[in-house]
Length: 160
Image 1: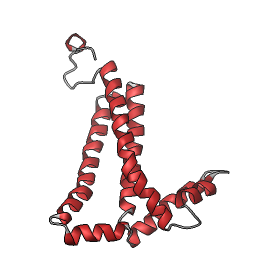
Image 2 (image 1 turned 120 degrees about the vertical axis):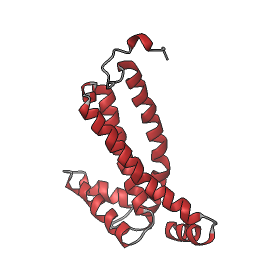
Image 3 (image 1 turned 180 degrees about the horizontal axis):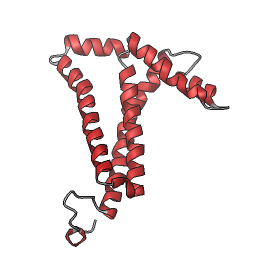
């Protein structure tokens, strides 16, 4: 289903190939920006603001999950085996690991139910990411930014 719709979009929709490539490569560019943001956070000691940093870590994990399920959606050989290997990592969790893997797969192997679940996750996770981003910004507004100049900016704050 997903492979056919992507193939249709790339071949038959005007500039569909461009939209697909912008979506895929835009995700890579977005991760470059995220890693630069994390590097800046390390450099300026932003990890000392625990709430903001922890929400940022959860946000990063949600972004990685979205990118992973998006990687699986074209349903080629690399996607199939990527889904198989990465989801099998959950089987290392004691007691619930194998059950969790079978739940993610929707059966006993990666198949169409897996693809359907990953498509739903790829659609729903951005809404969760948007909410987490608002929480991240709210905590940042409360604690203040670690600005490069080191000038206290509390007097310039406008209350939410």
